Image (cartoon, rainbow, N blue to C red):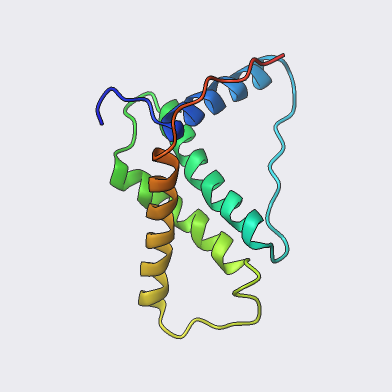
Length: 127
């Protein structure tokens, strides 16, 4: 896969460019926290966004970009929070933390695989 620009890599680079443009343009960057249980659609979007955000952060590192396993480890806590805030988990307690952690890792890896399976799209022009 070396040299191939995947959707995930492209979106990460696009986010870095967009954030840089927003900062130099004096615009505020707003981050919305998850505060209520969501729907499956919003949860899936949030999981993909967590993976995308870690990819974007990795692209900004000057010393070195993160390896795949490092990005997975960085994204998993974000995905875990989405899962914990999901409608499915509302009012439930985790009985087996190790199994739960394994499932979160699986969701995270599945989101990476899904994003990487998509063709890269050109960035939208910023105004």
